[in-house]
Each structure stands twice: as C-alpha cells, then as structure tokens.
Amino acid sequence: MDACDADESGGLTLDEAHACIDAHVTDEEDNAKAHKAVDEGFADADADNSGEVDKKELRAAMKAHRKGKKLAQ
Image 1: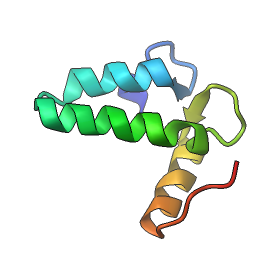
Image 2: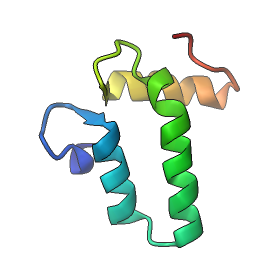
Image 3: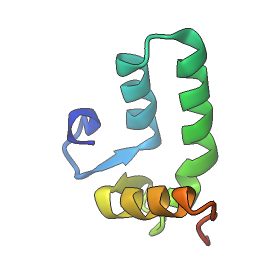
C-alpha cells in the first residue's frame, strides 16, 4: 500500500489504486481483472466513506472476502 500511496495520506484513493495496478500488473487480461475488482470492491472497503481505503479498512475487506462475505455499507 505504501508504494501506491502517491500523496502519502496513509490510504489509497480509487485513482491511486488504478495507477498502482497499471504500474505493477503488465498482463492486459490480469490488469483488466484487477481494475474491475477494485471498481467493484472499493466502496465496500471504504468503510468510513472518506474516499480512501486505509490499511485497517483493506485488512477488514480482505478478511471478509476470504470468508465469502460482503462488507456492510
């Protein structure tokens, strides 16, 4: 997350997440899937509706995803 946090705010905006994908996922199909996943999950992961996902929110979203749950909005 730190490598992709361009403004060093401690969280990732949707734009920062997309820029990070573009910088690190070179396979076109994998890149498209990653963008889609971020678009579909960003609002759920942004629990405080700040427009950024911080490490705590990301951890909770990943934990919920592993358990097959969708986070409540």
